[in-house]
Image: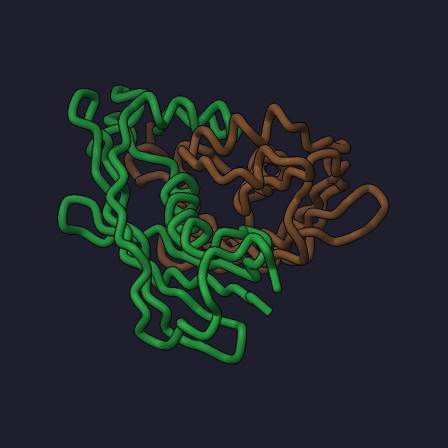
Length: 142
Length: 145
């Protein structure tokens, strides 16, 4: 029995909904993530650079959005060590307004169960648009 | 010469050894507002996507490879995958090794599939990081100028 797990394995089945969360991102969050990750691409902090390459504005790191999607699962299981794999597509940019920031809502659902191995799909929506596609996170709680 | 299918299989030298520190793990977890105690406890591990701190150094090798002729401002990160053998732990000394797995040119864009293998300097595999980057070609009017 994994002491870090915060849920009972038997309680999980296809269709189990994990808690939905909304994360408010600001420019400061992007700068913090840029420093932490080492991704200093100016698309994540410079409006003028973003405009020059025809982007609607400064956008969040796709990897940050993905990491927040993964966090909805690790918060739920308790132990990030049970993660087996994760895949996603960056379908739309998350534009982070200089003053208003951006809100991303994550809706994770269990979509497959094979013993202690589960697949969780996570929907990520910002401004009514899906910003991640086909996000699948596989965990093994055995 | 621009990037083409001929570059499939190109493998870069392993990045310099990187030691996972408690301070960097906490900094990364803070950037995700992740208060999970396992990142700070007695035997701390790193958040799952921390591997890109190391993988990013391998991506830079490819982005700056003069033979591929990539222009970073025209590169978009299209998809991303991780598969973990185990979590990275504080104290691990790791390197990242990139292989170009796929190159397809469709219209005015190159689709570049890359695999970065993160392993300890003792040779233990820790994580595989797969990414597709889309490199769009400059618009024709830019060529003329």
